[in-house]
Length: 510
Image 1 (tube, rainbow, N blue to C red):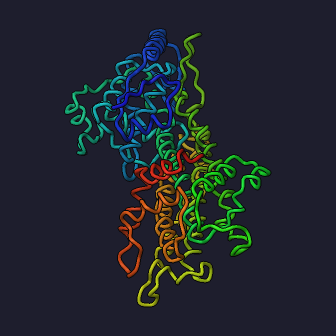
Image 2: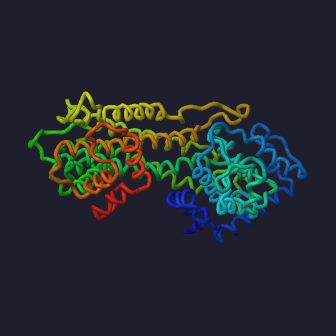
Image 3: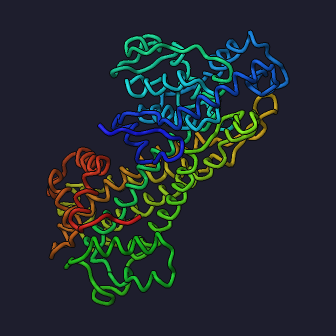
């Protein structure tokens, strides 16, 4: 099992996936240990000095002007958590819940939050021993941090709430006991240090981003199979066409397609069969490329956010200051996650159009719905229906969440980001896109068989062989959902990308 060392400085999306999905071990670096201890000493000093610092010796939100006595500090922090744990809906998936904990650990390890080392170690132990808090996925405004989701996480740390342990949902205190972890009693500043931040949206968004980057490669693979099935015109993929409009994503998409189709005897040149293809083929470098550029933009912002301080107040060691700022506000991630939604939705939009061009005889010149027994058999007719339904749903989900704001906390928090909604929707759109691309793979392979396969390219041959491993050519109607499930599985588990990249001798570019 791999190990991820937490420094607060250099966590990557790949490491998030390794911890959240592969259960890699998490350890705190020596530098972070020192920073956490130094930051905590400042908080203890501020409490001893009875300094007025937001969330340490004052109430929260609208109650920021209410000074809290030293004796009430612990009760203040506990009350913060139990009153803010008001999430709604189904729980976040295990990988997202683990990501919330991991990102909070990384944030706190930077030494700007004033948390005690033993409290931070409790979170690390929960990750490493498999105690996963039950965190409802709805109820965050994404403004003063992800208050509700993070509070549900902290409930388990103090022996309350609910958690999963070894696949079973149970009371949080019971899960901690079974894992051999002692619940903590929150001290000054700790409740606020734990529930003030953007970790719910960033966990959900980071994992959606990771999956989206894989879908970009799958979209190029599915597209290349459609080039084979439709005798696509290769001239539009020449680099000189894209060098004169050198958007990065556009250019690398054309390069990917040329590599995937290298050696194909099914593709054509301009004028051999037709002068030009429909946009869903001819403009796929421009369409897929724009999504690549958008998703790369999202990654730049995620890389910053996962290694940032997003709680409040921020403890600065150089002058012992506790500054109440606004780093918990989710707007810097709300817009990128909305962009991620749109970029993914477009991959499905164009994929469905390529499916339609293959099943529609007016466009393809192939038997209607890719069956030789039309009338008695429906072939792939309803596959396109299902793809169209998912694409239409994506259009609703892709509406930007970040354009909305509802004031809260009696007007103190008068602008909110809704970034957590955007992140959740990005994951949902991604799952829909994966399903549509799975359909395209299956339909394209059927089109290749009906067209007459004169010889596939290096990459398309590998993709075709993997699909045909479990999905035979459709001669007579059969239930197709299991075929689609298989194609979706080889996308999700990375088998398709691995087989294709091995065949072309290198990674597809993003």
